[in-house]
Image (cartoon, rainbow, N blue to C red; front, side, top):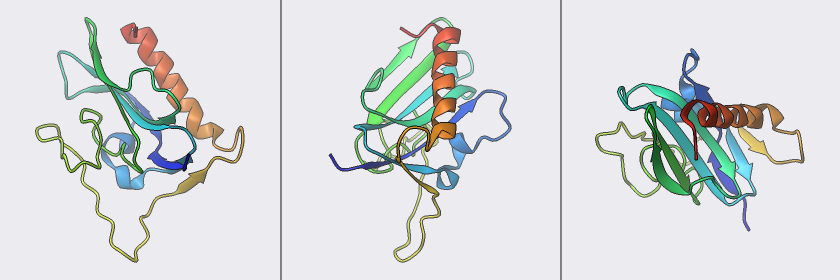
Amino acid sequence: IAALDCYICSYVEGQTDMSCLNNVSSLPVINCTQKYCLTVREEYLKKPSQVRSFLRDCKEKPLLVNGIRTDDTCRTYHRSCQQNLCNGHNGRVNNSTTGSDGAGYGGNHNGIIPGKSNGHQHWQHQGIGSIQSLLLPPLIIYLYCCISCQCN
């Protein structure tokens, strides 16, 4: 299996740095040897524009490939894709490589000019711990989401 480039970041409500949500071009990119790039967006039912947590990551087998889970408090969008940098969207659409702009949902648009650097910091899997500081926050967000919104 060829390696897959995925954006990687995490956000939890209350953080001042919101680049994970709205500045994809500033995010690190990981060279992932697993099967999926993913996003998990958790928002409040009563205030859908208020994001409780957000995750961009790389996984072998996502909890839910593409779907939405809802409970009394939260709606959680699970999106997975298998193209390079396909997880650069707002978390509500399936992926960002199909030309869908997530109309009505504030989709992200990025352009790459031939011959110019894409501006992304690129991370390589080089064994356990080489990107530990990037992978630990997504685990914390996942656990936070499951505890706070009773993930199934």
